[in-house]
Image (spheres, rainbow, N blue to C red):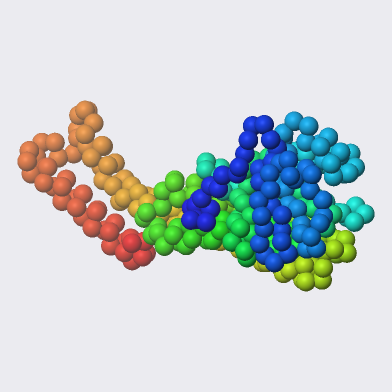
Length: 340
């Protein structure tokens, strides 16, 4: 799978002692300022339009207890946010939004179908995202904020995260379609076992991505329909657009899978035709030489009274002439029957 320039690994500000990977306070105008772990724990809504966003390592010891104590998150929800349950889902809990979303794994050495999960919680003034393995989407959104072109509020931040997750899905689909196009350009003579292996890989990836990303459609629909009031109408429209793009990508996955199946069937059909043609030629050759082999075998047995044995060299040429005549008759008969 090709790794695009935008897919190069981005490192988090990860520490072995702190759960905070990075933190930002949105200024409501598309920008943000960096906050550390101590300030993030003391932060309270102050200036109008400010929103706290902290990105945490959910496997850090005591993370569930911290979420319960500092964010007043109920124990079942905090357990969900820090668990390994990564099936996409979203639900409203009072005035908070809780979601688990999936993204494609572009980390070095990983297959795209090895999906990564992003847990999210927000009450409108605070957004908490959590991950286990490195996920590039949060860092890309943070870069937009640092450049002054990021989301303005909590709802826009949620939509930005979902948009990046879905956009990056298109990279994997484009790579698969490009690989299929390259395989289709190959001639029948260049097909190898590696070609079939590549087609099988494309089919596996298409099925895996479809299986993992289909539930995301339901999660985004739940966000669009059931998010709290701070999730504004324009945010719902953005989520609806993301849902439509995700549906198109899922359709593209079906097309990629079907294209791989058609290509695989074509290769197998060509291989079967070549095999049948070879077997046909061998059958014709065997049929032509079978009478000649019978005659030479019959005359070659070591017993008395073999015909023409006493004729010397004349007997040899007589046998050669008879065999040539039989061969000529066979060839004429096969041509008349249009066997070759």
